[in-house]
Amino acid sequence: MTEIATAKAMSGDYDEAFHLVSNALTVGITYGSERIIQRARRFRRTYGGPMTGSARAFDERLRATLL
Image: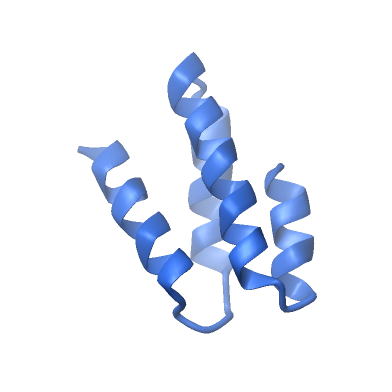
């Protein structure tokens, strides 16, 4: 899902990209997969698009995951 999210972000479909990466983060948290969580973090670090509501919501969720 993170790879598809990256492709969506590159094509300008930012809301869909964050929807997909958020779903991936949910899977990572549910199954305790640090690898998936790291991929979601990497997506956010490399995201170069605009700061949308979806991006803010994902940032909050990611921050809560790290606590």
